[in-house]
Length: 121
Image (cartoon, rainbow, N blue to C red):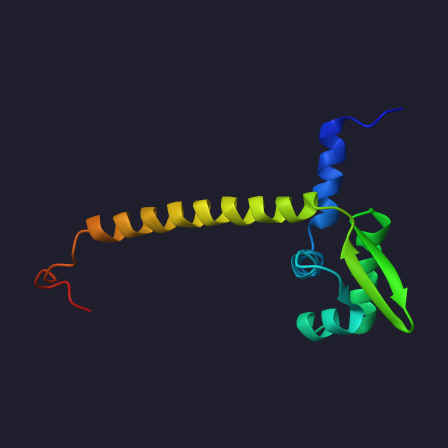
């Protein structure tokens, strides 16, 4: 039985839906990175990082190579970097829109006038 494309997309985004995984992918956008450097940048327990790297590796999003005793991770393809850039653009636009709405609401909010007599607390 074939999985519908929308369901496969949902699983894909669910797989990406962890802050550590997103941070790893952000760091790998600029080229291969050693595990020790990922640990230094992300500041989590090695076992937690290993678990998240395993999820990304099993999904085929990242690849690993060994150079002596050092394990190096890299993006499997450039499309993930494009996806992260698109997400940044979308979030920037959404947040800018929300900021504009908040600014407008603040500017049009009636100022608090004097408190009517007899209603002071």
